[in-house]
Image (cartoon, rainbow, N blue to C red; front, side, top):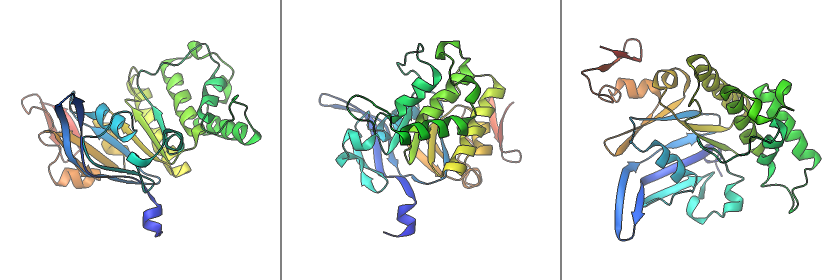
Length: 263
């Protein structure tokens, strides 16, 4: 295997996403071709209803794709068992059913479920990975608190630590900055950038924080008009991909400052 292929964490080929309803197929987006390597931070952006969550759920195997192929670490998603997939992808959804009566360290420990035995016993290796995740996210001081005692920003960091404890090459997060103020939005996305660099994991997330994503991400997936544009922020800006993302009568993209502004 070439070093280039071994560095490739996620790839799609002519992917079509949507929903199958009996004989009817509802296409959300098609012609999606993306390639994400180890150590890259990538954002999925687009207006409401463009298919950001649908794309992430399809890439993580929750929703079956309508057409095309998905490869995780050079393995076809279609031929990957759920047990094996849990060792490839850590998933952080916006509305996950998690008990906030657990302590921080107990919740993070759930990330080790793909590796524990049938009674869930943690080995020394599991405990080491849990503590490493806690240190990476810098939450040592709250590790024994109950999750219901945490602020939204603290709880988001705990969910990121749980994903790190799972120790997969790909981490997928759906709207990780929901309910956070501007400072904590920037903090969480800056943390994801730092983690992608330090751990060499590929991190893919959906976000409405487009200005922040343009500054922090290695690549972007722009969903619009039922298709996807993919590239570095510089490439997409140069190609004018952001110019008509929103109705121009209210918001316009300023290529000089690489940001959206209200007219």
